[in-house]
Image 1 (tube, rainbow, N blue to C red):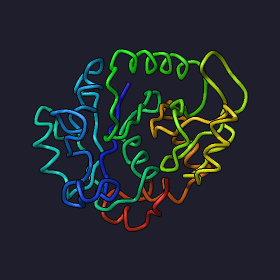
Image 2: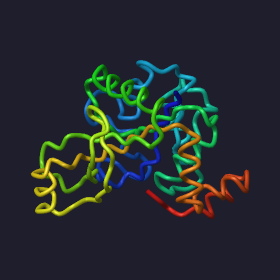
Image 3: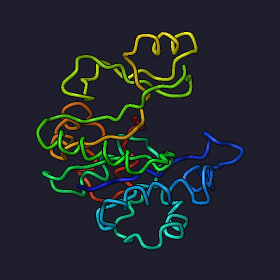
Image 4: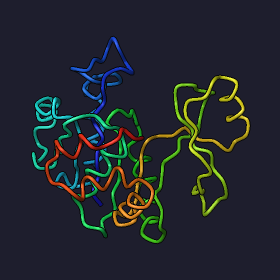
Length: 231
């Protein structure tokens, strides 16, 4: 399994603490280590360092190297501009074989229980080996939060695994209360796992405007000039 840390944050969520020059992944918000460092150590708890990759903006190149000096430099993939999640996942995934399992994680999560985190990851990895699909990780909501996106679930496939009916962006308070009361919604964690060939085929089918520039050119600057910003 290849793990990919998305670390292209722009610094606006935690302004004044974070800025475009020092986005949230470089902040020490919950511990004596930055969020990026915590994410890296959470993954390297089970994954070989050679199998951990980072997608970040080129302006954060030196900061990333300084924060994670043990990372192979070839595993830090630099975007020339910020185009959001779909282009970043596509950029990373095209570096891997089709039969590889890919685990995408944001750089800014605070997850104190690493053992429990990996229990969920390993269960998901087994599911991906036997099922086609892009798996998204939901978090059981503890309050009617208006600052998060939500995942609306449909039928249960197996224990703790559901089909997704729809992704819902940040709701107002009244709608968030309805989500919580229905028991059919989870917070969207922004973590994904998939078999690489399936993801690439789905991008060709549903988002050719994202993947085609990567397939037609090799110059990353030219590619990113053509890409839409897409979640």
